[in-house]
Amino acid sequence: MSEAPGHAPPHALLRPRIALPFVLVALIWGSTWYVITGQIADVPPSWSVVYRFALATPAMFVVVLAMRQSLVMSRSGHALALLLGATQFCGNFNFVYRAEEHLTSGVVAVMFGMLMVPNALLARWWLGQQVTPRFLAGSAIAIAGIALLLIHEAQVARLGGNVALGVALALGGILSASIANVSQATATGRAQPMMALLTFAMLYGTLIDAAIAWAVAGPPVVPTASAFWAGTAWLAFAGSVVTFPLYWRIVREIGPGRAAYNGVLVIVVAMVISTFIEGYEWSLLAVAGATLGTLGMIVALRARQV
Image (cartoon, rainbow, N blue to C red; front, side, top):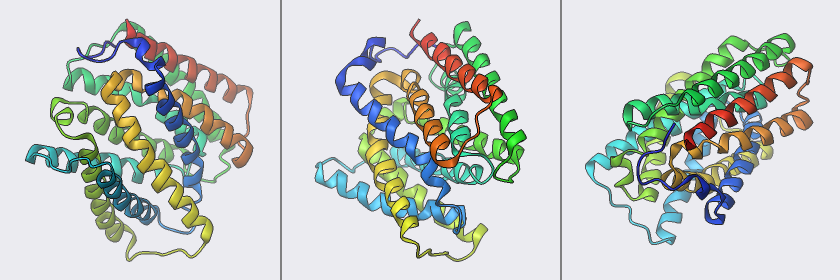
């Protein structure tokens, strides 16, 4: 899939000003998949999401003010921020947290590596970017690999959850994230101050999260365990306040296509953590699935450079 005119050339990903934040985002997000598992044991997932962004949102405003960045946006900018809040900071995370009740964190991370597929389809429709045969072939390989991982997950089913439901929830999260990724790369999104757009999107998302949590889970459930709040702080500050500005800037500089390479690194980190901490059980089926999935993603993403 080719990038829209004006985006950085393929080798831009190797420049330190892009490569360093790119790797940092992957390392942090790779860890967050496991941290989320500790957020859904004793607290309804909806309220766990609320607590994460209730901490992150004020911090984002502090960061913007400290950087002397503008918070002024047009009416269309606020409308876009509302869409981003509903998709990125509400739909995406509510789906993901629930998916991890049924699937191991590493497998959910692998599924999210396929974010490039809806990204490509939406960018084709929304931004006029083209999809190449090589991209489709790589995506097919990656999907086959993910299918093997899910078959393995269904056979093991250590969480005692509903694998099919977990897959459906993860797909809902992927679609939500994809809508947010592509919409913030539109002309309207690029015309807004990035930090203002991100901060208001997080604010609107938090308000929507709270309304949904109260509707589906009742009054707030406030945990007392220090481990829960330590995890929430990591997800809020490192996993949100630090990473989202970095990632959105990467998307603006090199485009949503090559930015999706981030997903491959995230998968590696998440699967390593899942193996050593969650006790993910590898088999020939799982190894074949992980290998095919990663290779397919690389083939598909390299196709965006031709």
